Length: 210
Ligand code: 5GP
Image (tube, rainbow, N blue to C red):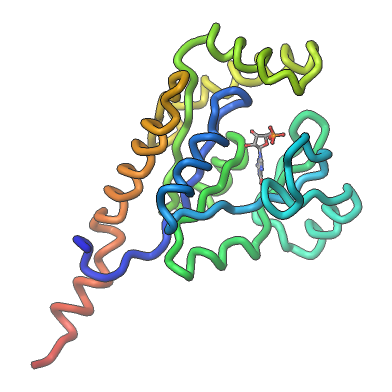
């Protein structure tokens, strides 16, 4: 360990429009490093084939989601393509266990988290270019044609916000592991940031009596 004390978990916000491969990159990050865990969001959109309730999302009804909002159980939420998506307060408990918590959320939510938690780390995942992004959306085959156009337009609008993020990582075709490794290095560096270590310096060197 090269930090003064065991570092606290980092709130890691990862954004990237549909087709940037953020899900694959995050899955690799968690597979290779057990101190990275996923914040499972709640959503009112129906599960896609292969998605499991409680793993990719907590799939809930619009009524249930609105009840969570009323009960102040949601840290941030947004409406995206006609559905609610939100981060549940209960997910933050994982940070206390020293885990780096991955929030895979869109731009507006990411900026809300950064405002509420200034020491969070925000990463934007980009595809290498326009054509690659379009091909990925078409090949995914789970969205209708006009939905693809919708997501493509939304993606381009999102890319314009990249400058609001702390870091940008490109996910090239077949190189998701490299992108996951880059995010891992970012988090490891962030753990050494002096502002995260100040308390430890005070405790270990100025409050210790021999
Ligand atoms: P998808 O339907 O493709 O799973 O997700 C659509 C968008 O919603 C993605 O950009 C995803 O990152 C975002 N999203 C997922 N969960 C949350 C959340 O809890 N809060 C916010 N603000 N966005 C989310």
